[in-house]
Image (cartoon, rainbow, N blue to C red; front, side):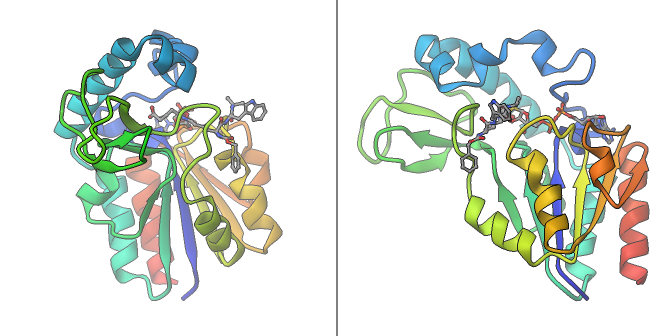
Length: 230
Ligand code: BJW
């Protein structure tokens, strides 16, 4: 029994063929954050930003969940208490694996957002700067992605879940980006057992009660099997 809150990052999708951000050769080695992941970058050059997200949307649409995503879906189905996945990923692989209780704090590649009326709809595979909003017809459409300087989604729901968590697990995230990087401290403050599952120690590894290192497709299924046997 008990409430489990799981934070996932790009590392859980690495073995599905999707690049991480800060590892060697990752997305931020190929693109400037200021150009593609800020509202100012989008205002300056929407075509560039659409090209970046169109390519990632195409790649994510072809990707399949791996054993780590599948293990988390099994955990949700079989665990007697609550399981909430809070993902920083925008790739949709948790739902493809069958997880239902998923919060996308940094948005979703397969959603479009109107900057004027905040209407959301399924994004076409290729978004263009000339697209208009199906609700208000304004040409102020953008990928439904949380960029630097914007407030991540569902923060109240996440804080509430962290305050009630018995176990908090962070999987495949470098812990470099806030507010997600601080979730371990929040969960710890409220008494949760905190676990890091990552390829190597993240910058915040010392803040966890327990750490296990290795590829997500190995350490996550092993941890889920142990958790379900408790
Ligand atoms: C494996 C593996 C395998 C590899 N198996 N593991 C100064 C100080 C503190 C904060 C700030 C500051 N200046 C500005 C800020 C705030 C800013 C911030 O944090 N900046 C930092 C860079 C310092 N944050 C924001 O602006 C956020 N908004 C905000 O704070 O609003 C204020 C507010 C908050 C709350 C309430 C009220 C107000 C918004 C952040 C938006 C982040 N957006 C991005 C891009 C959009 C999504 C997209 O395009 O996909 O989100 S940035 C990028 O980083 C993306 C990711 O979700 C995010 C996290 O990256 P992640 O997932 O951790 O990936 P990596 O590459 O960093 O790490 C991968 C890990 O996997 C590594 O550890 C590997 O070892 C591991 N790994 N293979 C297991 N096989």
